[in-house]
Length: 464
Image (tube, rainbow, N blue to C red):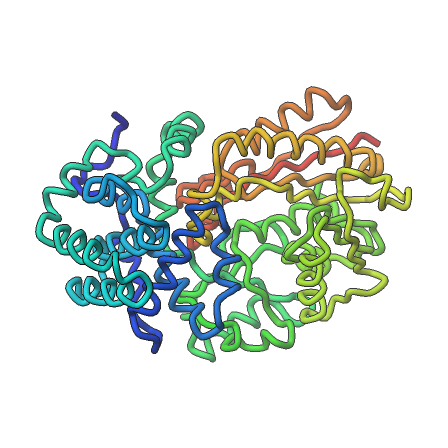
């Protein structure tokens, strides 16, 4: 059995309160939440599920779904104990949703049960008796049922077994803190568009709008890196000047990419430098690069639809797309199909990965991924590194990053690349950033303000 914190209850965050800020009846949101949970368990992205809903139902469904997916390990164990043979997918999704929410705060639990039964009567009436009996038994026997899960790691940490074991191997001193961090609500973090004004000036506008308390000078950080963490999330429409491109929403850890590349090796990219963002969508890092440097930028992504969002981001920020900020739909691992033969001064490779570092923002990821995915992703990451390295000028820099906490997608990829690539040299860079406030490295320390996402950064130099 793995070592745990001294707690007898499954590790679910009592502060992760879904609340009831929406006007739709709870039975309706529970019905939609059950659809979402069932879809995720069948391999569908929650983002896609939410996008298909009527706009009025998305916020409430997302709030409930996030809360449920953060407690899904507990709910699965409880449902297995109460109903060993799983019912039909939607009914199972409803049971799992109600059990997960009943383990947290935010609802009168008898009301929650009544509303879940009401939802079932409207959607799958023959199963309503089962739903009523199971949920009321849980309310009667909650203490005993939860006590029986004490030795169940999945119920305790609300992550799949393989995920827990891999973190234990990769981070033997930090794995518990990392799992618990994934259960927390992520902060809303902003990046000021320095082409429109300084970060200090935008902070002052936020203070004036009542969205940020006055604070001291920013912590020591790389040039061009000054994330603004809000005490609470707000709709972007409430952010001063957002529609005019004065700021963007971007996690602190992700905000390290552009300054690391623009100021790589202690030298700032010169005006007109050719810069490639090889896997650009949704465009936050591309935009940050163009905010910090007067470069000739190319944003490339394999999905034309995702590039639409990149173009929208650049337009909102006043950065293009134009002759200095091109977007190209093509496979980065096949340069012969899109490269013009002119080498790049700098390349950003934000490689496809497991997204294991952004589970706070996408709680479905942990339930969608399989351990075998990591091997396939590692092959893709290797192929991209090998394909893009020849496109880099002598003396240029390539920044490799992933939003992953697994070493197989981070340092192990760079170690393997350096072994097979003569002359490639690794420069000082943050390496693995864990989604916990434990950083001692001055480069990484600012990302821990507000607890940034899990990330990996490696800066590579090509010999002149």
